[in-house]
Length: 334
Ligand code: FAD
Image 1 (spheres, rainbow, N blue to C red):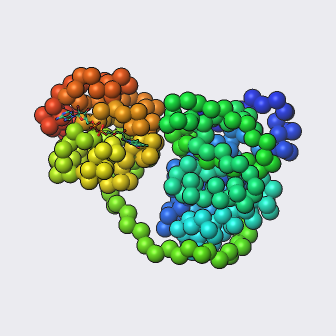
Image 2: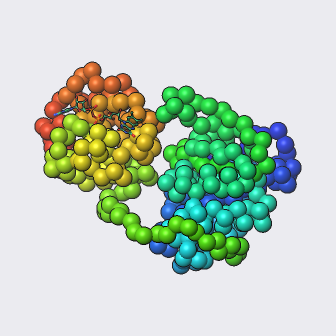
């Protein structure tokens, strides 16, 4: 799905504007907008009605101002309260519900990220709606397309709920660009709900490399790398030569070669970069579920019958310990 499509729905655009209104939920961390969450605005644009976006947390003024520049957004609802910084669903869900009720929205859209997956089912339950998860396309205001069975089947689902609570697959909706819009910024309702959950700490893998979920190029390593030392020695220079994010198969993560946050697949991240390079990865169906929509897939594997070659656009049969350093060297010189 590309760009801002004119919805081909049955109602006239004017009638639609009266009927529909969408709230896109934006993510922020430490006062920085998560640009990937602007995908929720792209999805909302497909509906054709007015769009508001909500952001909550401490020091969110800059985030709200940045989001206000996205074309087509009428209003930014900002709730300045540090209690929402960590996106704890226990207090974030009542916050959303109050603002949804006040705004009378028909569609509430968030990314199918850890944040969205944690939050939106609770919002849906509080609104007595059936959540619609991980959609890849909007057919009309009540009909949505979503992959099921790890992408092996595509379901078209219809919702008759008054308020549709939706999470979207980021790879199917490009983030709305920050343009020269001038949405109004308004204080939202803050129910200041008590949360029975307390934020204790987080242990995040820090990296200067591009973010895996949004990178244009991804190089992923699998069990074929044999150890963490070899994974780092082979994969990191390749990633740097390509300016790519690093990913991994579940077998590589489970074996301790790579951090959990790097897992690509059914139970990891879903990515669709311009280039996905799979190194020493067999191509199990659960791995393919996370990367098969990549524009160009390149695979290096010593087994010519490895299933990864069935989805690869470019394949190299050979020993990765020999081939990858060769490729890295050539790329570094290029
Ligand atoms: P292997 O299957 O062991 O493949 C290693 C490959 O490396 C082989 O093809 C081998 O030929 C090649 N190789 C070995 N040495 C070399 C060498 N020197 N040079 C070149 N090639 C070499 N998996 C995921 O990745 N992501 C998920 O999200 C995920 N979710 C899952 C969810 C469920 C419910 C289940 C049941 C499984 C899930 N899996 C997931 C696991 C998945 O089924 C596979 O076990 C896993 O993807 C295998 O990882 P791999 O390809 O690295 O390892």
